[in-house]
Image 1 (tube, rainbow, N blue to C red):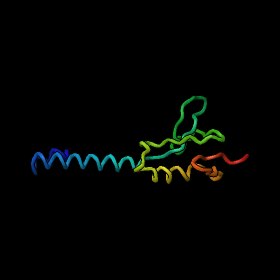
Image 2: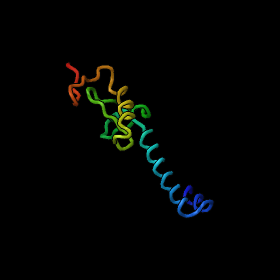
Image 3: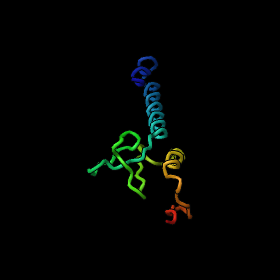
Image 4: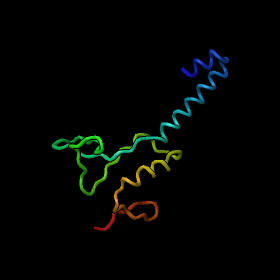
Length: 105
């Protein structure tokens, strides 16, 4: 719709350029504002659903399953880290080099 309006109002060249820029901006905004949720197993099934939305789903002890609904790339790595940090839990792991290690039991 944006491209069509820009072509009708302006001209073909400028309208197509406006459409390409608008498409790129929407992709960038969608990937940076992605939803991140903790998943839990539904009772008596092998189905995993968001714990926040489904009361009958429970987390597996010692395992944290996280769904992040966007591709992870250099442009949104900061948003991914911010979304993942509070969901790791209070125990969290300690960082050694580039790898995370589980906390001692």
